[in-house]
Amino acid sequence: MIVSLTDVKAGSKVRVTRIRGGLGIRQRLSCLGIHPGDVMLLQKSGFMRGPVLVNIHGNQVALGRGIATKVLVEVES
Amino acid sequence: MTLQLLELNLPTVICLNMIDEAEAKGIIINIDKLSRLLGVPVVTTIAHKGWGLNQLFETTFKMGHKPVKSEFLTFSKDVEQVIQDLIEHIKEKKYSKKLNVTHRFLATKLLENDQHFIDEIKKKDMEFIKAVQGYQLQLEKCRDRSSDEVISSERHHLSMQLYESVVKLSKPKKEIRNYLDSVLMHPVFGYIFLVVIMYLFFNFVFYVGALFEEPLLDFFYKFLPYAEETLGADSLLYHIVSGIVQGLAGGIAIVLPFLFPFLLGLAFLEDTGYLPRVAYLMDTFLHRIGLHGKAIIPLILGYGCTVPAVMATRILESERDRFITSVLTTMIPCAARITIIFGLVAFYLGPKAAIFVFIFNIVVVAIAGKILSNIMPEITPGMILEIPAYHVPSIKILLSKVWLRMKEFIVIAWPLLIIGSVVLSLLKHWNFEGFINQLISPVTLLLGLPVAVGVTLIFGVLRKELSMVMLVQALGATDISTVMSGTQIMTFTIFVLFYVPCVATIAVLIKEIGSKKNYICNYF
Image (tube, rainbow over all chains, first blue to last red; front, side, top):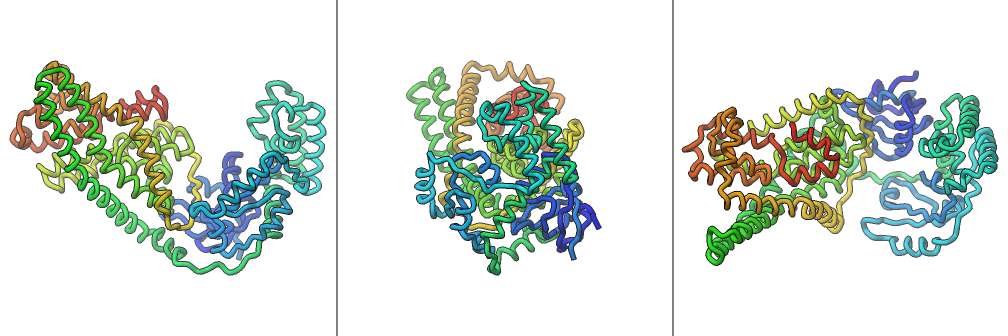
């Protein structure tokens, strides 16, 4: 099932399927190592509509709400 | 990233920094193999400890004139075919020579729809652009994604292949710092720790600052009576000298004692890696006023001095965010304005009133932020923030960071401070005070303040903390509570808090966001 990153529970492993949005966002995310096909661990989901914290290739990255909704993921068991 | 650089075929040395961090995470890299695969030398360093830097320089020096050939960089067959076709096309037109890049680099960049190169060629040759668009379409068809995604995922795929062939993973060492985050970024405890850390931080700053402020001020003011004697109290020269001395004293005795521990503490928080976490925690709240978490850093800096705070807005990506944050920082009470709050409100009306002023200030800043972001309803690019692992900062780097920021203050703000003081002295010399009081009496009357206060407000533009000193002089009473009522003291303080920022701030604002916008800023 494909959902946006904001709808995933903290602690789950997800695979990025698509990044909606323009070239700018895709490039900035790819600089941090987030591409379609990557597996990342959602460490914390935003509290009170805050940012989400993901662990990607061993690095922590915080994504603001606006960006997190644009990242579509598939939950891996 | 690195693969893109290699496409340029320039002489390259790869430096793997923070190799100790990688090892702590259980990542072991086969350096020789990586170097062989990429066809360039690879050096490992731990820069903040200075390890491997010599080797890096030596290798770089040797490599200086040898171009690299990285032939192995090929994408999957279908994508590669499109790239090769485009390369042939580019070779015919000889564009890569004109733009001074390799064929392959230009080809991939064009397929990625890179604005710079597309524009460059659009100027000359629209037909070629059409051809490029054809190739882009071809890519999109075979992968069912936009062409730039295809290229970037190919590149990513390549780097993952490299990664798998040279990296051995072992079990990461368990560390305390992994647990640190579960407390410091906790939705409840995180904020409690944030408040505690900020409280300790500001206590440290004011403790150290106060320790140095008084002896230094005494030292400078001892000099004044001496100058008065030798030059005569009414001479023009005396007023100029006293202006310079006061400007110097203001810089050395009032600003530096607070700025130094403040910047030191901030650099410490930054280098340990706590600051990005603050940004993470505050994102929720700043989002409400249309900014994102990173904007908290200049806002915190604003409590020290507005000048470095405005400079710190550079970390924000969009111009709109930089502008809004700059305006907000000018409203945050800086060290000089905090002394006024302490000296007037806390001293005459009690600490509760002072806390009220601070809270009132934060509320106003929040409302102003909300209004500004509604006026400029551009969508912020959103926060993408890398959260580094915790480090033990090195003292050398801390000090050099502090020095760098202090230098900005010394070069820009200080000369203006001195000039401001001299102007002030000259005004006093020619007895312009009464005239100024008359001029702005409408404002002072509107606020319900004594007319004599007017001149202090003008001086406040030059030097904030002077408005308090001048207040004593202008009213001719040492105990202000005898001439001003509680409400008047409150109005005065709040007015000083929000009106025109000091000259030094205006100067930095002009430098950072342009004079036009500065005008709007001051209006607030």
